[in-house]
Length: 115
Length: 111
Image (cartoon, rainbow over all chains, first blue to last red; front, side, top):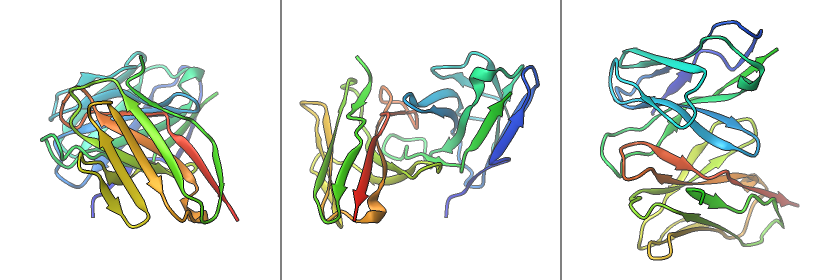
């Protein structure tokens, strides 16, 4: 059974703090994605990675960075958290690199509140 | 034009009703299509893939019309447990694993 895990379900941070959100997949997948989900805005892609040490900007990368040092781990970093980054953050990974196998498996999500 | 558009709902239906969700997508190069289900405060989960020939999984039927760039999901004999948000999803510009999500249609099935 596929498994994507995220380090925290709930997180509360203060404005200006550096925040790390960790995602781990045990499926040996190459591709990993970070989204945020907000009411009325749906899922928006922040960053994704097709391989170790590779990263690509998504639709809303501003204020975020990522790290992929190992295949199974993809970290999202908020360099200086702001209140508008309060959101649900979802990590996802598809099973294959070919079109048609790009179903996303999601982690349980991290609900981040920035005060 | 938004890449994937859905009626946000909510759809409030009684148990046993048949309900249909529609979705349109803007990128004619899209090759993969899905319906996801998301329960309140949970992550999205794949409900079913959508094929050109149409496909059925129990009470759920999905259809794709490439010419009109239109996807549908039909739920027959709806159950209380079907209450959730249904997300229409297409792959982005034919790329690998990069999906575009609609904002979802909320369904509430009442006793």
